[in-house]
Length: 155
Image: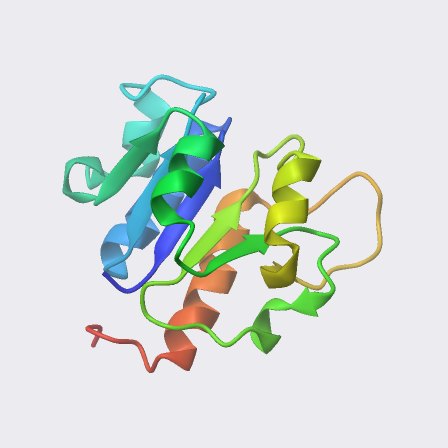
């Protein structure tokens, strides 16, 4: 697999479906940290995933602690609106994990503290109440990482 995309407690099934589809088409894995804000048989998840869902390399975790215990020896980038480093400044490698928080509130502060050395952001206008859509953000960062790696296993 090229990359590992991690969604912390995703709330909107269409976002998760779109990200899953992007993961499948870029030979990347999707990691979902529960609780999810939808059921896995949700029609919007299936529709946005375009029937790719059964082909996606998806992993489920009951908590962040479970995820972190398994992957703490890997590079985990945290994408947050207040990160100091812009995502294009990160030097991505095959196998990296790129984590995104829940749509409504991101990730808890303890996760920010834990992953602060690898926190990145996507530039946007300064605002206090809005950020880019989760599936758009994931695609932006994923394709920059893949570009840096010369699009491995992709034509």
